[in-house]
Length: 259
Image 1 (cartoon, rainbow, N blue to C red):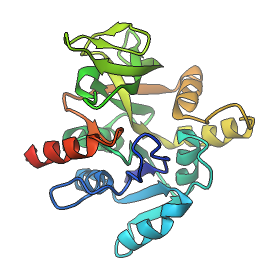
Image 2: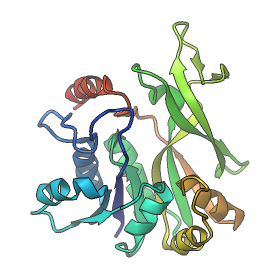
Image 3: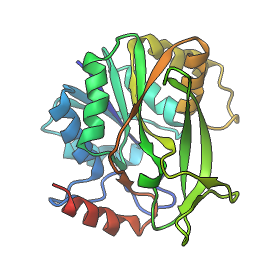
């Protein structure tokens, strides 16, 4: 059965306070609480949460009565691939990866877990959102724009910064380039089969200090170069999440309006 890996080890630099446990749900839930609930309902049987050292005690207390939730400490913020690599040591079988500060919606989580349970066991997957449904009214956001091959599998991702909606309704990035609202983007909702797991440690072993973060796009690109395939699963759902301080009240309002 699939295991959910939640990445909750970010520094929350733009948010200004630890956003991993920010109460935003109608019952005071953090976004990761909602994702956990959706993933378990969809068919995940265990979860691994990657946390910062200074947040370990708070997380341990929060999940003390949930033995299906395990915690892994990322002592250094080296990157998302490094965080996943640490969590994979606790995983047997397929892993579903998600960010701890994003709300994907039950439908998108069901797509990911559904692929993990019933999809081609040789194919990984990415649940991709439409760009126009992932913007923040509080400021620009960075997104990984997806390109598909002729068969509909993921071909590449391109990191685009400063994406925002202008007064005219046009979506522009930090360079002024315009983007279509239906452009597919990655929000780090991945399904990874065990065949990919060894590649994390192989690549990390050659990742030199000072070469920047060891991010998931590096591992995904290397896997595709080795002919491993990623199904591109399009969701019609809307995203909300915590990037800027003003996002917290916006997320609370959106979650209160959802069934």
